[in-house]
Every structure is written in C-alpha cells, then in structure tokens.
Length: 288
Image (cartoon, rainbow, N blue to C red):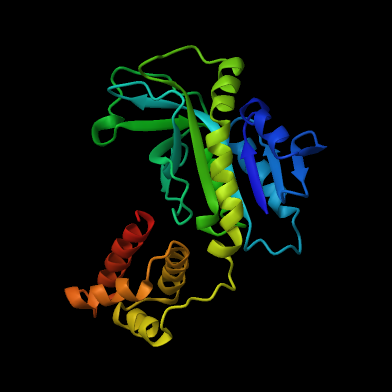
C-alpha cells in the first residue's frame, strides 16, 4: 500500500479526486482500487509524528514490508541565482533543528526529481540576509514536518520506502507572503508531475521492493563479491536491494562486479573499504 501524508489538506486537494480517495475520518482518505490512503497530519513535527505513528500503529497484523510512505508538501527555500518557486525536490538529507540530528533517506526508488537537503524545525523559517547555509549548495529547503514524519515512519517501514517530495512555495529571492491560496495554487500546478512519480512508484512497488524478489545474477559470483568486500549481513541486505533495482533497469550485475575485480578494488582490505566500494556501486546504479 502507498500512504501519502501532507500537513495541510490544501497541499493535496488535487490528489483526492485524481485517485478517487474517499473520506474515512476527518484526516484520513482511502481508495481500495488504487491501494492508497492519504493522511492529513497537521502542521509541526510533533503533530506529524503522532499522526503517522498512530496510523501505522493501527495496522496490526498487516505485513508492511511492501508499504511506501510518501510525504508530499510545500516548503520554503534559501536559494541563489534564480527563484525556485514551483520546483519539486526529492529530499536526500533531513537536518532536525530540534535535536540537532541528521537523517539520510535512502534513494533506491528513483523519482526523477532534483535532490536537496531540508532543514526541519517547529517554527516558520524567516529569511535572513546573513544566512550562510548555502555555502555548499544552490538551494536548501525548510519545513516543519519532515523530521517528525521520518522518526515516526522509520519505526514501521524500511528506510528506502520513506520518500519526501517537496514543492517550493516561497523562497529567499521572491520573499512573497505565503497564504493558503498560494500554497494550493503551487501544489495544484505540480499535480501532474507528482502524480507521474506516484504512478511510477505504484507500478514498480512489487518489483523493486518485494522481499521475495530473486536475482538473476550468478549466485557464486554474488557470494564471492560479498565475501571479498567484507560485507556484514546488513551491508549484504542493502546491496541486494540496489542489485534488484539494477536488474529492473536492465543493468547487468555481473558486469558491475567483474569491473571492480578488473580495477583491483576487490578483494577489499577491510569492512571500511567494502563500505566505500558499495557506496560507489550504489551511486553508479541510481545515476544510470
């Protein structure tokens, strides 16, 4: 099942009609035909965390291994050069301003959107001329819910099944006053692009994240690869997810592994070297 969550109903009003979502409670909508539900969490990290935890906590006895949570919402942006209002970003890093921790959502499922960091706080971000966060980035996003949603969802779902898609409603160049009407307008204009990403995730969910998926790659070659890369059980599990994705994209796993032997990257000296090698392979796969 796909669960979509948003802080405000105005951010996803377009989505209810498109996927024939019917109201179940005041903050929950469901479509049996599309195997999808929509949760309105309310504003702020605490409310978002409580809403997400309560929803998945009520799924007692249901196997959640194939579930995906997509957080769709508006956000502000610190940017330079040109305005990014209306741009859609896939979040690859969440900086929690409340507990000063950082979270890195996995990027196995490809959405085709640009990637960006987001700073998540419990108050509205105020644009400041002295803001220095852009020293290493073209854009940094700001919202109030991402960290709360991530912390709640990770208790129930696999890390790579938690996806954040943010639409910029205001930025440091335009500095427009933000209203519910403006948020609704920018989100509705992004509806077609967001729906395309949702549909692609729906179409590939069983193929890309199913636990029972088997690989076509040579089993002996895989065993030698994991042995020579000093991979722990966790490292092997994560790498297999990327290999499954590679096969779906028509990338031959054997060629990837054999190339590492030809380059002299295998066998690895230790687990640290193995982690570095696997990260390079993962980056190669998701950029193809």
